[in-house]
Length: 288
Image (cartoon, rainbow, N blue to C red; front, side, top):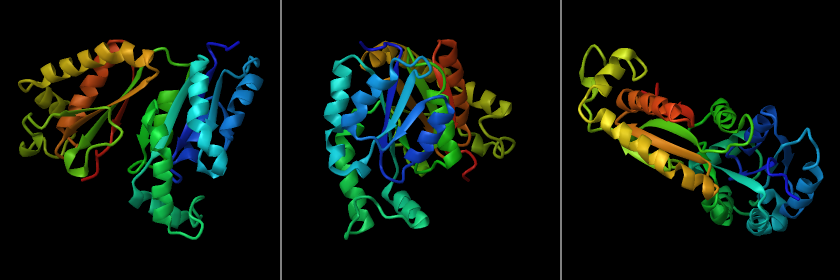
């Protein structure tokens, strides 16, 4: 019989995207972590650990290192969910350029590389993982994240008892640096006047009270945030019902310094007041 309080988290994704960092962060957060487990051994591992009172959360790192043993990951995961096991999926990815740079820095071969090129191996891996990525509860793009950034994301989203509601990441960004690929919703606040053109505010950021007051007092600013908070509240129950417990909202302005930062901080406050667990990230703050 399944223990309804026992959590299973499958950690997978692109080689070089930070799976090892995520595994260490989860272990520090109190998870029982197993690395490079063949999918076929996932159910026996759960059966072994479920009766133990000291283990309530199991994180399993599964990836293409398993070779042919990796191929049944999708079917094994679906079987667990059909059996009402509480299973979540964390998928880590990064751009080809970043992954190539990381492999070159580590001087380690890609597990699929063999006699081909590194790019060929990465593209083959991405193709192998595309179906599993589509079913992930949380996708984290680590292209612009340091090891410490990734640990903060893991800690914010996976520390503590198993979630009964969605956890919301509110992420500010600058459109000139690209839209975050891991965002489930994207808000554009470039319709608001830009504090960059106010000399006294130019060097400050959206975390400063003067900039925040300036941005949030503009016509339409709070109305937009009210609508986004309402959308999160509207879809939250359905997300949990469908097994999606992690939502990322990207709020963008031109450079990710003023308007997006101020509105991100305010939306996070509103969502916390509505009872959601919220983590704030400012992707491009300080990038100028």
